[in-house]
Length: 399
Image (tube, rainbow, N blue to C red; front, side):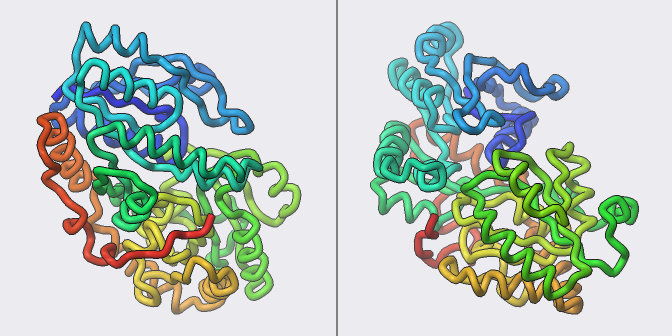
């Protein structure tokens, strides 16, 4: 299958969507698919080594206003139509809904090339965090318009598919997320890394990874950190990542360690060298960081939705609380900070819970779905073939 993958974020950018489609492009290429990735040019970031599994075509783009770490692809419909007339793909898959992604949908439809899409980011919810709340309905309408022009829209969980159906999105299917349990492994724990953080062997290290941005609910996260620190002054706090809020948070909380971005191999060591992962975000479509923390053997706490709903069994392999109970979220974080036997029990159980969530299985199902869409058939997978625990409907998480 000749596959054109269009995305406005891709490695070496560091975020969940970039990581996901970096893995998907690589693994589909390894399976013998001919993958070409169309993405905005990022000359300001160091590039990875050439990838034999897929080809990249850079297109014009601009820094996202207010968030220069991310790129906005410019419309490229004319160029894509010329390219695809000369070298016609069997399927176009659009991973992001920006100007580049929307123009790719139009180009594919104009050439009668089958086109599918993915819903990965709750951009309509982000409007509330960046001073554009009145545009919430407009943003949702734009997302629905883009996705409903494709043969199938993939979302990470059954609950998100149900939510999007309620918003008028059509032809939804699940593209879950895998976790590389060979990379994210408790065996990567490093005493030298802990010493670098200033943590003694018995000190609980509380870890967090992700974009340091308004939509990630950092006010609540730091309220939880403060309560943990008050309950157990031996706690150490490490945050990996970067974003618009980093400088302000770093000034306000000098007792926490902000590392900035770290290479992925080092990231696995950072996870494994910690003890606790606290996930406060309520705008995730999945939350790769949570499953990476679980694979690394950390005791986790988070809200009961997205990845946490799919994989965490409260009290068995982690702690979850309802989405509208911030006080209970803080209390769960304090439990992890103060109850060493609980941490010791939850960590190995968390690892076991995601042990079978391999990228190989996830991408195998996605490959079959894409082949069916390219052939004009119904998808061979369906919502009832996902993890059984993910089946119960969930309330929409407040942004």
